[in-house]
Length: 441
Ligand code: ADP
Ligand code: MG
Image 1 (spheres, rainbow, N blue to C red):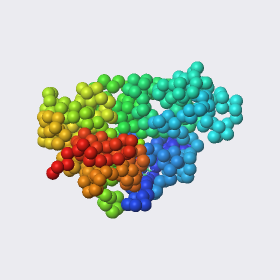
Image 2 (cartoon, rainbow, N blue to C red):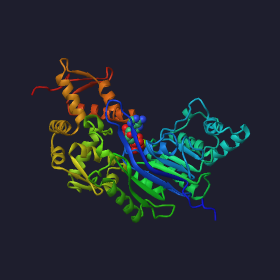
Image 3 (cartoon, rainbow, N blue to C red):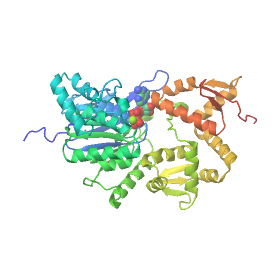
Image 4 (cartoon, rainbow, N blue to C red):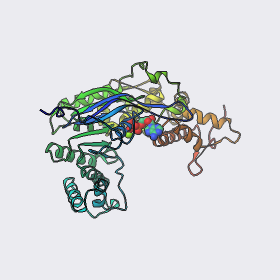
């Protein structure tokens, strides 16, 4: 028998990735990541925002060379974009001035495939993915779900052995995402997809359990594979099956487990990073946070709720609830542990306070636990005109995280600080100030 038959298609070996920063310590994003993908499997990469999932996908695709370690594709070291690997992005990334057909053909053009063959393969991919009849439409004429179908067709048209998908459904509404997921699994199960394996990034636990044969759970700071689970259910899977629910629950527990003390690695040996600008925050509205605290404090939870049950009760997608829980944890209002969200005394106090009381508690929590907000306020207090441009804070954030994360983090600081009346913010001037803010000590 051919010795390569059982060899993995792709192997990530001891990969480490750090982003170089001029003004501070390098940012270590991935550490000692090992992943092997075999032919015939769908593997899911699950992890919190910022844990390095997209970075790993870019490394796998050959778009980014890891700082250390290597990727092997069919036994050979990857040194650049890999033929045989295609990627679907979260944001569709279509060219607005090209038709569906032209967008799909792009991948083939790059490979130098002749015109007639290009037309034929693009049509096949378009039909397969359910876009027949839309060949000459432009992206702006399509719904989000259909645009993502174009994104899929464009990846499939090159008949890649490995299809990479980076949160492919997260920009879609719930129903559209579900339809697309189901269609994709059906095509996969019927072996109609011209691919051998899928590696997909998601931060949605249910999605991973629904689609994948194997799930790798990433830990954060730095990202590494903390757990690997084989999903034991045959397709089609039933979300309501108690065993399915239990499996989802178990993953919640893994993802909310308190991180063990950091092992002594290069990460630990790196100079300490200034926490003020190093913690990415996800935009969660203070309204939602307040509602969540009230729900938790009330009946039937009385201060402690199982996350999947709470998500169902609040009609939230599971992946919307986790960031909210993380925000409560950051603020000291809640604790995530073993798949539950637990109210702290501070959280209980908030839930029972009136509007002004809540603002005061929120302000105190921000000052104590969110160094960025505290730093903004301190700057304003110190300035003679009590004003400060947002640009300088964004620049400092970008020294520690990607521009997208810096943006999210700054937006969160703006909205939380405003709610707590720690400062005002003028959108037009992109400027913080102490206007209309109580400053008397
Ligand atoms: P995920 O996809 O899991 O949300 P990413 O791989 O996008 O995570 O990012 C992981 C970390 O690396 C984040 O802290 C992010 O801010 C940082 N990062 C990503 N890309 C860059 C970049 N080009 N420059 C600097 N930092 C980056
Ligand atoms: Mg990502």
